[in-house]
Length: 525
Image (cartoon, rainbow, N blue to C red):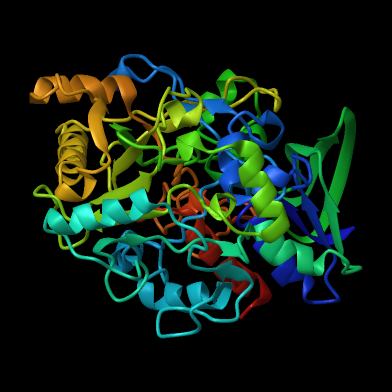
């Protein structure tokens, strides 16, 4: 018997395992479907390019055919390994705009304003620059500046300034606007996932049990109280019991799937799959949001990009000296700006610059040398949903992202701006020594119709799904403001699925913040 069972050892689950097991009187079980984070590509930051094909560390999801994207199925990689997606992401440390969290509270997530969120961000963060008003200096999650950057990344920043934008040294300070280098979740040039930051230091606690290769099958209830979990370890069925709480940390896809498999979800959908309805909760799997991203690719006139590097030389320099391109997160520079379509004072477009040719998540290796500008709309109006494929837990959830489906067509209009603004930056003098010609969308694509066609053919996720177990106080909210599942007892969801709306930036840091606050709720602080 355990006090707490945590399902999923990802960005949130590792945080909770650390914080809850700090009480020696609490027995904590942490279950992870994937393996340990042993692979060296996980820990070498530039190894993300090689992790694309490592399906043993990746759930390897795809959406259902997307009506507004030419019927394409978009690939959605999600971490299936200790550390979850924090073990396979690009390590960019951003929080979004302060007003994003005030919006959460206004939408019914009581107590989730910026004033409440900032102390949890600071508690989690160990910034190499030291503590300040906006940053923590001694938290578990190491945040640092790059050891190595590519000259093309500096050219991107300079080009943004030439295009009339400002430079910033801190996307997480008093204001988000501007262009510069991302800080990254790294320590001494190595990835600092939540497994590294939170789990590794406490692995030997006698009251913490970590089980990998354990895939959840369904929750166990006594009356309305969650008391345990059924799971498979390999092909062997197992059960675990919790005296106090079961906590789901599977992310925006797995947590709602497990709720539905356990009878908590939209009643009609559950009945179609032959699942007995425990709680009719139409919000489970609804409200799906993600940042859609469009890439502009340029063929370079020189060999400065990472396309030309020797993998062996990079690895050799990294493992011997912990320096060089192997320490790069690849998406070194970026920026935030307000487009002409911005609806308020917050930046509405985010950029990631990659000094390499990146097509189809890097799965399509293009010939030659070049560079890529990612651009995404930060606050899409489109909403998707999840659907059970069957009552079999081994069957992947069906993802209906519904990109660009808002009735007004606003999301598409901003995505067109993403392309235009990317091109404007790339056309500046700073790139003149490096520019040969545009590969995508291609110099023949100039009118709006051509740009729209390009977006429908090539836009992809930038890996930020949220919202499918939304927190709030209304009848459709899945969890309350302390992340307790409505309609049952002793069950919480703690991960990106509880976000009412997307934040204006990468979602890993906010997920860690959510877990830090959840640990306090559970402990009664």
